Length: 379
Image 1 (tube, one colour):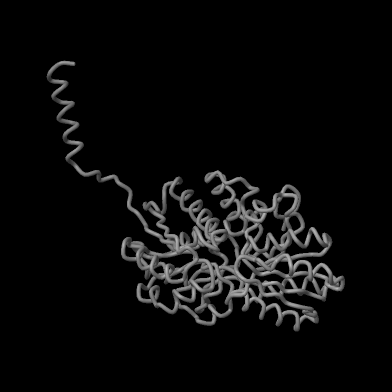
Image 2 (cartoon, rainbow, N blue to C red; image 1 turned 90 degrees about the vertical axis):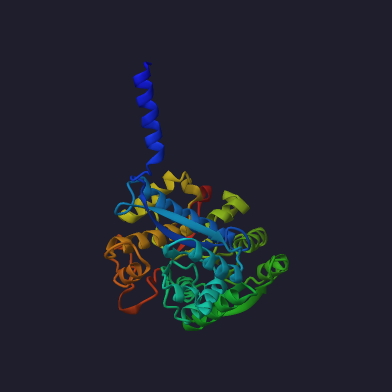
C-alpha cells in the first residue's frame, strides 16, 4: 500500500468516527410490567414471550413506519406495590407511547388506584385480569382484550349443565381473585340450574390439596370439579383427583398455563384436564393467527410449549401496533389512545376487539379446550 492510499484510508476512517451516524433507526418505546418471578410467573413469562415475538417480527420486517420498536420490561414479582413502582420507573426512564400486559387483579387495581397511568396519559393494552371488581373500577387507561371470569364461569357451567353435569365442586385460591371467582361460580350455577355441592378455599402453597381431593373423590354424586388457582395448585389437584377418581372431569380457568401444567405433570398425566380459553384458537386460518405462529417460530418456541397466554401477549402487542398505524403524526401517547378508541374487529384480523363508544372490554369470547395426546391443547 503506497503512502497516498494509506493516508486516504486513515483520513476516511477518522472521518467516519467523527461524524455521527445519520442512518440510525428511529425508535418507538413500549413498556410492560409483568411477573417474571413469584406466584404469577407462569402467566407473566408467556405474556412477555408473546409480545416480544410480535415486536421482533415487526422489527425484522423493516419496523413500523420507519421506526424500530423497543420493548422495555420490568418484573413486578406478583407484588402490587412493585407493579406501581416499576411502572413509574419505566415511565421515568423511557419515552413510552404505550404499555401492554399486567397480571392479576391486585396489580391492576393498584395501578388504577395509584393513578399513575392516568397522570401519564398512557394506555395499558391487554391487562391480564378477568375480575369484575377491577373492571368495575373503570380505569380509563385499561384496555381489556379478554372476557371476564364471570363469562368463563358461565361457559363452563352452561356446557356442563347441557350434558347433565349439574352437581359441581368449586376449589379456589383463598385470596381476592379466588374469592371473586367463587362468587361468579355461585352465580352461574344458580342461573343455570346447577347445584354447588361444596366449595374448598385453598391457602397459598396448596398444603390442603390432598385432603380436599380425597373428600371430592369419595362423593360419587359429584359430576364435575371447577378450579381457580395458580397453576402449580391446579396441577397438584388434578394429579390427586386423577389418582383417586380418574373419570371425574376437572375444568380450570384461563389463568392456568397449559405449558406449565404439562411441565409439572408430564404429557400423559396432564391429559384430560379442561381449560377455558379467552382467545381464538391459534390454529385457525385467520391471518393474525398465521402471523402468531410465524412469530413464535422466529422466537423458536415449539408448538407444544405455546399456549393462550403467549397469544394474549402477542395480541396485546399487535393491537398497539395497529393503533400506531392508525395514529396521526409522530408516535405519541395521545395518538395511541385516540387510535385505540376507534379500534374495532375490522382492524385486527377480524378478531372481535371493539373499543369504540368508550368500551374498555374488547372481547367476550370464551371456549373450552382440553389437553390431549402428547400434552397438546385441543380446542
